[in-house]
Length: 202
Image 1: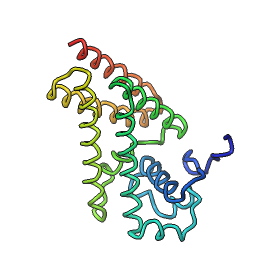
Image 2: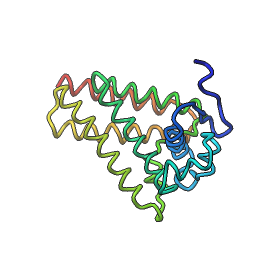
Image 3: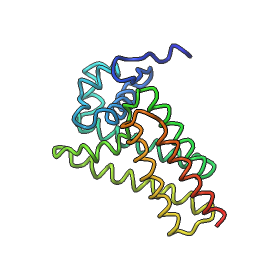
Image 4: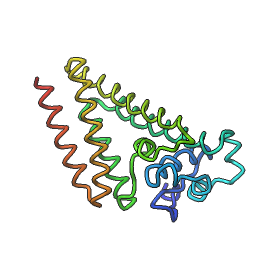
């Protein structure tokens, strides 16, 4: 199993065996988080993923735009899956935090959220990405709110708390990158966890 991944020269991103398209999409999502839309070129994705150039238009007839769209979609689905598979909202919070703790540390605090990167580094030539990112955030909020309702909150309180949670967590990741330390994420998890426990006691 140790031979399934080898490091690349690009910001700690890992080359992985497996389906070429999946590998390219995964790499594009990671690069989006680190370099933004402008810095996630086809050449960079190919270099980091190890995919052959001919695979770009085979797997992505729409070129770079289609590849970046697939990357944002994958990033959105990853968070939705985390929320849906966790036994409760607090567990989802911990899983999300553990994922970001690992990503930040392995990349030397260069990693960022690819969905947020699309909204910050908006490209007028790729307007559809902004709408896709907005839809991803809305989906995360709705999914987390649904789990909070299951834990006993009413719809309004759950929607508000879900929105607050995402705002705090996304901001914490950005602060971790700026300060080159994990403390903001730990602080965010502690604060949101306390809110969850308080609400659950109701």
